[in-house]
Length: 98
Image (cartoon, rainbow, N blue to C red; front, top):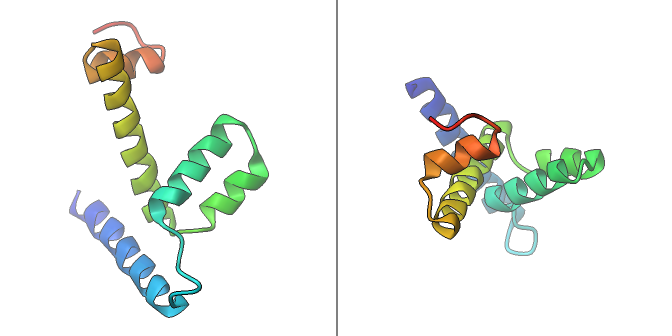
């Protein structure tokens, strides 16, 4: 568990360093922008865009961004459907109701 947190934190530090090196005109990619591009490209089965989005940030940062996007999407759908996040997640994955 702590190793996973340490790896994610290292990804954040690396992203921050890249942004400082890039300067104001060439800022590093935001991990949430990369995650949104990656997930939308996966949904559209566009391998070229998947590869481009995956190359914007470290794999750990991308994983964190995709997880955060998934959590936010499930919460938004749960509110919209007036259901629990657990029920929505199970429905999206095609699992039987718990």
